[in-house]
Image 1 (cartoon, rainbow, N blue to C red):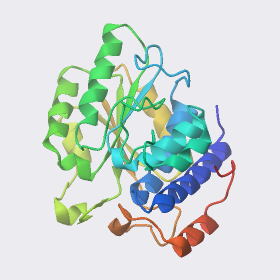
Image 2: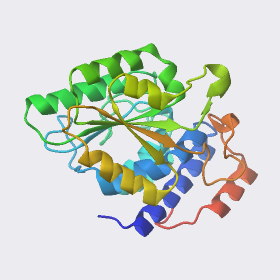
Image 3: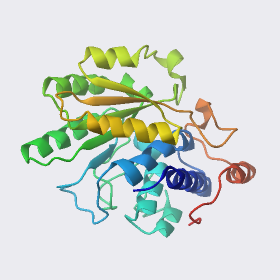
Image 4: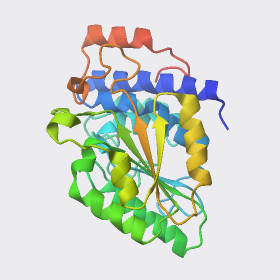
Length: 280
């Protein structure tokens, strides 16, 4: 299991991968990818029991479902750095005939990708189905999912939230990236989400708060969440992050939701992100 120092080093390299991938094709979504880098690093290198000998049935291992599929640069970097495929393949991101599409898809058979995502609001339903399947198969492993806070404006999310609580899907840990930003501006101005804790608790979920860019807190809260599974309630982690975290001129701005850095901005970004594992 990786140490906190190891996890921080991995997340730094993942951030380098993200900005380089998006810059290379002048297309992609760096803001949310950078903000969630610490959490997904901790998932794959600390919390989840998973195998790089990938199979779609996912038996006897924890499963992860990326619902906010636009943060695909983050997902691809994590999978490559975890050993699912060669890191060099990151250089094909969003290029013609690549397996690394702008939003993850399954028909390219990229190891680690279980669902096509990017049409927001659907991932929680899929994660619930996977979690229930594990219960039916008496598989003790967990299902994890990741969502954007803007995504919670989708009605399907709340149908799924209601269903999971009613059916006691207590082997599910769903995290929400609460960065307060979405493509058109702050969530408070686009469609105010008000108190997410109150909402999830009203739907009978267990809710935990997390400082999503503090690796020590991420690890502690993930460990706590795992210890609270099997107690009759699904678990929601409200993860406070900074969009664009790690690159000062991107931080906190919805403008970096879906634009790529130019050459000068890439150089500035990479100067702030230590190369710890070697660039692809």
